[in-house]
Image (cartoon, rainbow over all chains, first blue to last red; front, side):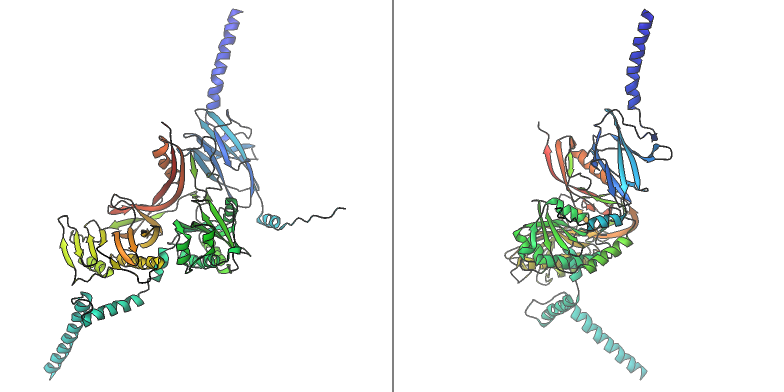
Length: 151
Length: 461
């Protein structure tokens, strides 16, 4: 009985020691879309602020701020295998704390994962960029709203 | 008979040579005092005629040109940046200037104060952005457009950025980032030619990197522990273009370290110094000193030229108008630059009271002078049409076939921040652009980022 208790304690200690170590491990070249990391305040995405945007352009610039030494990687979601694959290798944030990256918008619906890692932990942020046709934007620009008298 | 004919031809040849060489010496060297001699007066007449025909209006236009022109298309991918090195720059600037002149001639009723967001939305649409190298006084800017005054001065006293929107109803936006003054001027001028030029450029320069303004990436807004904020109109390039490596030479010295007397002669001509009435001597360090009634001109062996007026100084302009004085000083700067056979153009880079600053522009990029003896290529002080003092670092810049890219935007920014980060809590970057730096030494120069730190808040002890 006593042996079992000691074993259980040892197991619990091992698990509690291993879990954080595993969490801090670098993101691999392919990650799941549900990946979140261990923290939510490693980086702050400045653009797109709401983590989603629409544009008619063929590229989009994602910007972020974080502390010096944080390593950022960019992944793109591939619906065929339901995984995100790395498209921009790890870049370390410098003394300015500023980071930006230009991504190509090859599809109408583009999902990216921005991962950040430093000694404090790791974070993964999903970003969705929809590509819309220029003609749609032009149509929207010309829309005029007429308030009708409903009575 | 044959011998006689040969003698006659030889005699005519010798007489002609005598007349040509004799008059050249009398006119060029001004061997007789001004006002007393026919040849001397002829010399002035001759140089006036030559200056009338030598067209430096193009160079003068460059003196007051913007540092860069950005063509905004509404898309970040096709946004295009041009400098004076691009063939289309001059025509684009000239067309843009017509619309700016139209705006600055507008009545007060067409001008309105706007907020920063209205200006930034203009930059996100089809528009042309002109970025000037310093904050111009509106009165000086108006004068350079050929206007006596402008109602714009009632809304802001300075400006460094101008945006022209290209649409069915074009407008001109003026920004004074120092005071956060933003104004919009509605114009009725036709922008079709400018729009067509912009379209040509964006189709031609398709390999440019993606350009974002700092405000688009929200780097102008602080967040949390973010130490660094950027001026909202700083351009951030995704990849760097390659720029030519430049060689810098001191043309005052020949290869064997003797003084290049041709250049010294040319400089004296540019300053209209009469070699017959001035006194020349050489100081111990090798500095050549020319003393005349109006002032003292010194040229040292490192290429530093210094003129100091004695008494009233040298008469530059008779107009009694500061703006006309600026034009005349620009002519002098262009002339001295040409005298040294420098391929670089010059651009006004600042002014303070009666002092004007000019910098060299090499291959479309600013050559920033940064050494203990000078912080601008030319500093000229003028009072009531008289040149009081003048300093210039005489250089000759040549492009080499080698091209190299500068470091990336963030690499340059981070290394600047590194210098301050230990002692500063908050750092604001006023401007970041690519240029060359001349620390006074001769040799090769590579294009690099020039980072202007606007304001820093020190860590409290």
